Image (cartoon, rainbow, N blue to C red; front, side, top):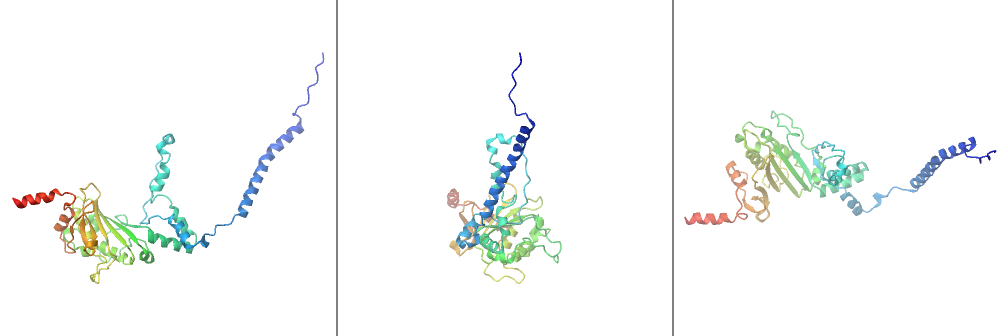
Length: 333
């Protein structure tokens, strides 16, 4: 018997060529359509007229970009590459974004890019920064070295222009001090008014005229030879007279007026009292406990080291009312 002829199939050379051509042309066709749509969107889109907004609205935009400035800027932290299986732990999912939000000095700041827009935006944004942020100024062995000779020209501590200093409203100064930064071999023979670092701080801060709150934090680095109390004593005695109404000497720059001076160590400490101006006593210096209770007035620039130590660790009678009863019992005896 003869077999019936099979129907024609798509395996002919012409049909194969057509299918191949269509397969190659289809992606190019869709890519052309995509590019055409994108070009139409870009052609119809105009830049947002930000500078035509009222100044009040522009200030609201600037406030969303505010970040506290740090001088000198902290070094970027080293990137820690975790395990490739960290994605399996739910607690690790948001760690990256959280670190970016908390890392004030790590990576590129989002607000820095606005400085590149134009001079007007730069000026407007810097005005908001100076008025509504806290400037953090740090002095440490990393950016300060005590001069070896009196004639040595001191290197500038903070690279801040005088125009910017005049606009500051709030500033925190952190003084991380070692005994070597005092610039003397024996702190016991040193006069607080002769401290070179304090004089340089006054000189660089003399342009700060409109500041509303200026705080100083003195952190003493432990030294096996000298008690850190000497660092605290010389720092407070040298700088608490800044901005005083009394006429300063011709060789001592006046500097701005401090509002608070706090103390700490690079290790554990029992908790030190701090200096702050008392609004109920004509803004004179007074000592306060860690909970904000006044423990007594400050005796001024003539405070001795022994008196300073007594004020630094005097116990608060508001926090410990039993001290009053103990005193009464001693008087009765």
